Length: 46
Image (cartoon, rainbow, N blue to C red):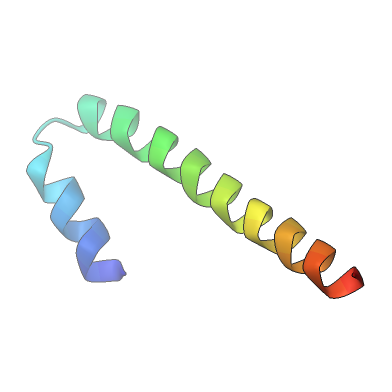
């Protein structure tokens, strides 16, 4: 996972554009983890 993140950051040259890629990807990552946790909790409760 770390090597993938470094590869993505190396593609973007300036730090300004890098921020615009880091924030959305971070939000998507957090949303995915939270969604998976909620889904697991719901499936376990059944």
